[in-house]
Image 1 (cartoon, rainbow, N blue to C red):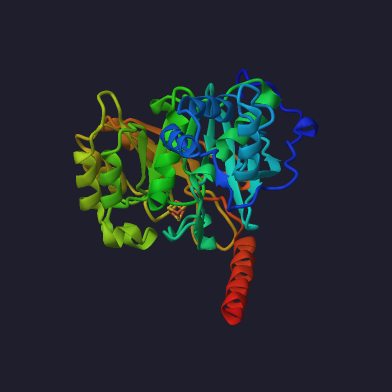
Image 2 (cartoon, rainbow, N blue to C red; image 1 turned 60 degrees about the vertical axis):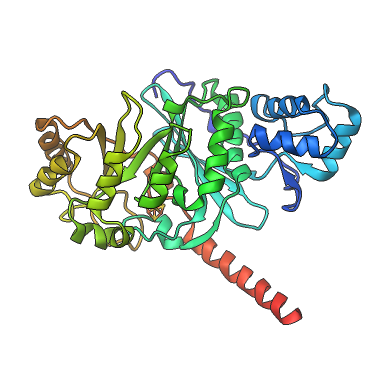
Length: 386
Ligand code: SF4
């Protein structure tokens, strides 16, 4: 835990939001400055008002329009009937003995989303979700068992950061330093909302997070990855790789049946990486599946010439899964094979496994199923009435 203040779990009191604003209000939390300017001008205000509003929301973390005392009373009144500052509401904080905290949030439609704060190695990383559930079907991933529920809006994504920042910083005095899009969902399948959320997070008059401290992870949706490379965002990218042959990757990650290893690696070789940046490859280690010496050899070959670093992630078990985690000696041996070939590699110690907060473990399948059922019923009722 290094220099972080010890968390007194009893004192980890969550802010209370009396009720979530209605979904049909204009949600400002995830609105980039440019769009906010258009919004205020369309409502008869000068463009500079947008900068004031943006700074209140992002920099100062305002949760009510009343506190924005440098805006006129009439504007504040107008905004409080028409717009909303909170898109999600804190629901719970689950502490793991290793210091990791899983935060859960209620959404306006009854769904629940999760983010994880991970203090380690002098950093505090927040892992955010981009979707409720996920459609990608990766076999080793607990979120996949939920299926896809829905995309999160840019406000629902940015609000995970805003709440987590407020909750974490008020309890520990230390700052969130890094953001990774590695929670529930495939970020590139929720493209527009993720890009807008990134624009807000990177804005110098907003949260002003460094491009180098934000990472978007993908399972390898190649055409969208290529489009993402064309955005002026320059955030880090991580690829969830997990296999060194198409046969194994086809089996583990259905996305590979569409865009295989050659296509994925080809796109990464063309990716417009800035100087001194590397692509992170996540490699979830599964005993007897992808942890052999031949896998290590093939991995070296696949990454040859690519500025890269590899994170080996010992698989995190969950009920009903058919995999096993390799023993420690095998993981270390695999790492040494890569090191011997000059691959930049670390073993990413799994944190938060006790609270199901580690990579690929987010999600509450039974709740997702209940949510889908409830919404199927209401849609059916709507159809019957209509
Ligand atoms: S690993 Fe990521 S992309 Fe794959 S199913 Fe899980 S959340 Fe989705």
